[in-house]
Length: 187
Image (cartoon, rainbow, N blue to C red; front, side, top):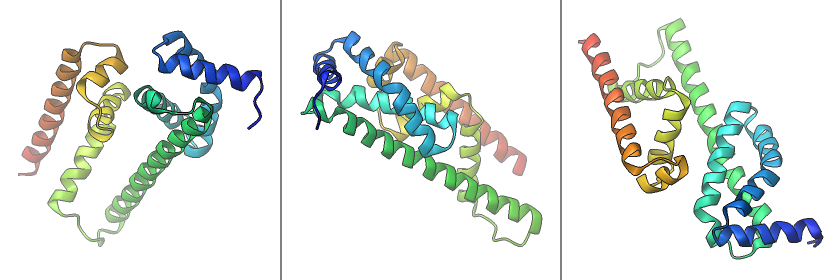
């Protein structure tokens, strides 16, 4: 690895950020975000998805930065996280497209195999979640998909833990009401 002033400054920022220096962390974000966003755009082929992934990457960095043993490995570590999260995002897009194609075929031909009641409920829940505003979907992703604790999410969103709990409760209630409303229409 070529060690020049830029790499040495980057390593110093990593060390300071690991020690809790917020300015150093912001410096890392400012330095690496443009390149990271381009990387995510190329991988996801979607600007909105790329921004969502980039935000998730920085959240992962916040969680794991202190465990990074070699500050010189920061760029590789950062882009490894980004690569993994982009792959997850693309897999989700492919899955959604496959389901959409299946249901389009079902609607047009009517002879495709009918989904089970459980499959239909899962698809209905996924559709209800996709219809939520981006901030609410992000909260659900952090808690249920990425497994962050209430406290971690509160820190990430800069809100009290009670607010996170309240928002999650409201979202669960909204989704429950949506599900029950759909079931009432079917019976």
